[in-house]
Image (cartoon, rainbow, N blue to C red; front, side, top):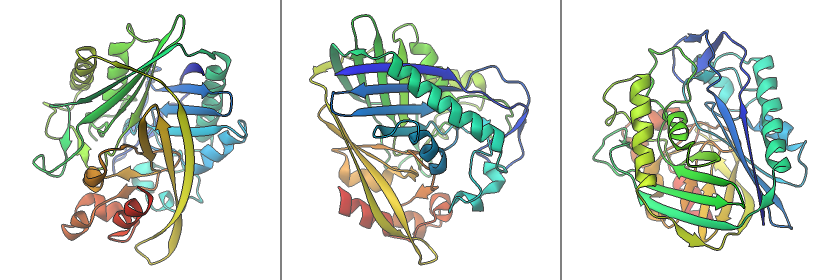
Length: 351
């Protein structure tokens, strides 16, 4: 087994309108703090790339164009979902995003080109840095005080964090999966920022040579009830708090392998038309992950917590909400393109 890592600063056309909130926010000064990170694996039979990008979401059209440069290789591009990155990263023909320009911003051809080019570069960097993987260990913990269910903190969420430490002869990398909306910075801020995810990475940069962060089932999870204020300092505090759970915990050695499968299922939209929903199943070591091209509500996966979940993966189809959310007319259900009950059916079918 070989592993490689690449990091790249996202090129930004500045000034630009930010995506994430239904408000016009123009950022003018870029401090090179939005990043792309890639871990690549080669087991001699297949190659898999796991890319984390500091943007709100990833359009499947972008993924398709990047995939063209890496034929026959498994490509997993996940947005961290920061609400403080450039908007306009959506092709005008997208079946869902075309209806949400107010917070995604108008299609920006040049910024979209820059994102595609940067994704290709960071994956190639990881491929060029491949070295034998000598040791792998895993950490599984519950994290408190960083986030809660954002609709009602007394309702169920997903506090689980899973992290894999990968070690070569001279490098150490970390892959982290944790569910939390990166919305410490609210709509009153107009600056480029990776939110707490960036502060999390910065706080660990002396311990690891590279970090890839994938968001979990975070559609209904955020810092709404845990943050003390909406500020850059608070983003740093929460990022550091998340780090403290990792550095104070013990990793357990494992034999590492990976398996990748993709399944496409039909799902009904609210207008009674069908669309294809791709779902990605990953085996990392002994743990199974299901990846979705949307914001997956944590209350949907309560019966399936033997597995882990990835949101914002290889596309952005807005929210997947549970029946209760529809009945209560909650934001996540209102923003979902899918018919009530469809995600319960899909989860039962695939898991």
